[in-house]
Length: 61
Length: 251
Image (cartoon, rainbow over all chains, first blue to last red; front, side, top):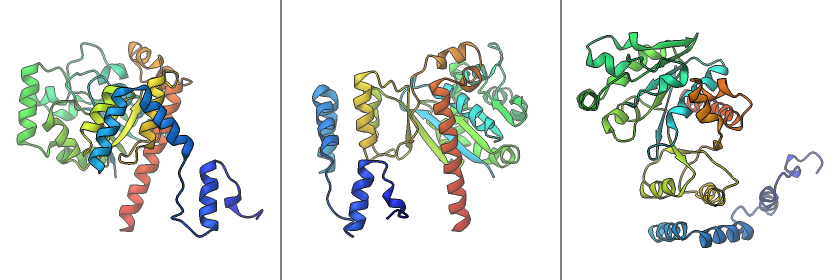
């Protein structure tokens, strides 16, 4: 393990990538809840940004 | 072999001319031979590089006067030059726009000659002159066509309205102490529907001060935050161009 370059983790996201590789499950669903929460709070603060996000989501659907 | 990079604001006042001057200086500091071409009729680029305010010559002025455009370039240092637009009235700009509609391959035809002398051709593009823009982005095989966006709600709206524009976006004047800018940058970096230049440029009082001193930013304030950002941007451009050339050589 000491020689495994993937052991030198630099962020939480890398941690998840290592886990995905280790489990051989690249499709493992992972939701970054804290990023989602910060995004939702940002949209709550700014009505224009929320309206635009709503429009973009509508266009993707 | 040269690389063409163009920069156009998402709207007016994003700071395109300042960034082109600063990036050109930073690429030259990396040992690259750089020509800055002002394709916007403001005729301001030369001022960032020390030209006189009343300097009238440039490639568009040469076209209007039936002179040689090559004589309108100014050498700033060995391997570093600027080709200004030149002084032109609104009517004359309309004449140049019409001429570029008729001769859209103007820059494409000039490129081989410029490529013998420069590694980089950096174009400062205008907002609302489509033939000026197309002559560079569409016809001159621009390898790095970029858009510049200040981190504000107006640019956010315009980016979304022009969602089909595939050019990479470079964020400018980012101030993380301003809450709405911090939130916007978070949304932008998480937005996978668009490609970003991964080196945002920070808001920096040294930027307008550099123009007031008639110098590109890295020459005026090498230790400033924005100069460090521009140096990072230059390295990204070099890496990007190197990868593109390697891909072309391979396939």
